Amino acid sequence: MSLSHGRRDANHHRQPNRPPLRRAHPERRDRRYRSPENHGYPVEELAERSSFLEVAYLLIHGELPDPTQHGQWVDAITHHTLLHENIKKLIDGFHHDAHPMGILVGTVGALSTFYPDAKDIFNEASRRLQILRLIAKMPTLAAFAARHAVGMPYAYPDNDLSYAGNFLNMMWKATELKYEPNPVLERALDVLLILHADHEQNCSTNVMRAVGSAHADPFSATAAAAAALYGPLHGGANEQVLRMLKEIGSVSRVSEYVKRVRSGELRLMGFGHRVYKNYDPRAQIIKKVADDVLAVTGRSPLLDIALELERVALADDYFIKHRLYPNVDFYSGIIYSAIGFPVEMFPVLFAIGRTPGWLAQWQEGLLDPEQKIARSTRGRRSVTCPGSEAPTLTLPQRGREESRQ
Ligand code: ACO
Image 1 (cartoon, rainbow, N blue to C red):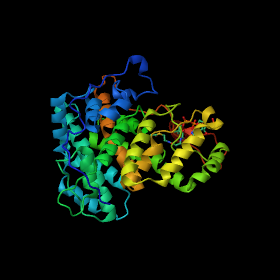
Image 2: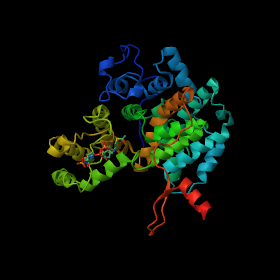
Image 3: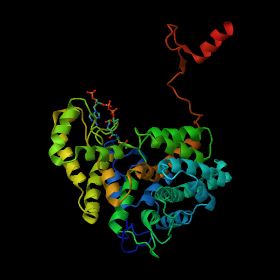
Image 4: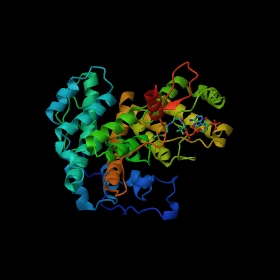
């Protein structure tokens, strides 16, 4: 797929004359309105008026950067995007049809062996360096993984481009001397990364904190968090939405599909959320981004099915009673697919967006004087003998029983 556009500089998402972003009033800082990890800035405003790297700075530092801090931050990340050449050899060793998320999990973990200084986790300067490296290198690992799958030579980072623009460059640059990303697609990707940057104590964030609590280096902890995200119950929902829309196949079959959901036969993918029991604010932003992207790439029949599905579901008693609304994944898969990403790349894109959130939570855990090594409060492991009538024994009890025999 080839994309073309006019080049912009790395800071172009910052509009010099824009009014400053303000934190929401505390009373409005409820779960409906924002992710608590945004430090009080409504996610809608961040998505509309800031860039992904600004939001990354906000998550790591707790405040948006001033112009000087922003310039230094973007510059530092831009200059850490290259990978050690041996990582390329490592990627070459993966099977031709290896899942890009599997490659990402393996290679981000492998980075810890290239940066032994990352073990110095209580050194502030070292932590900052690893944070820059991770935010910078995740897109490079991701794009190299994608190109390995299709047998294309790796495209090196282009420091003239924005974070999202450079990622599109590394994904799709072919023989042209200079790749020029389409500005609408570049901005759409940046917004999607913002919307995925952090979201409470979800599964992968928990893993990041748990591994970090054992004082592992951040590359190993990020590999573990990405492994959690690889699971279909976590990072795979947008892929399921795309498959569901293809299965429905046409607008005329939407009502029949919703009836099957009502009967309990199916779940509507991209609907419902553990936290949002009303319209996910991120879904509204994404719907607008989908319109912008499809105006460039051409209208998708899947969007028509999605719109009809949303219309029918939102008027349906079952969905009203269960307070089920579209979530962030309902439209993101349509956008990724329209931009040209294969479905296997969806969780990888999620991981790139979530990296600053993981790192902010990892650092917060390390700096918390009350943090102890993580232990699960659930799941006492028990042992049963299949087919026997013997009572279930937990492992320590079992040890005692055995020692008596
Ligand atoms: N379609 C149909 N019914 C649903 C759906 C759905 N998408 N989601 C929940 N329900 C129903 C359940 O059947 C249940 O009904 P019942 O009380 O009559 O038995 C009730 O709503 C509550 O369901 P829970 O699973 O307990 O709700 P919970 O808040 O724990 O689940 C979840 C949230 C997992 C996201 C769920 O809504 C779901 O499976 N959605 C589809 C998958 C999806 O889109 N995941 C992406 C989430 S966003 C993200 O991870 C970035």
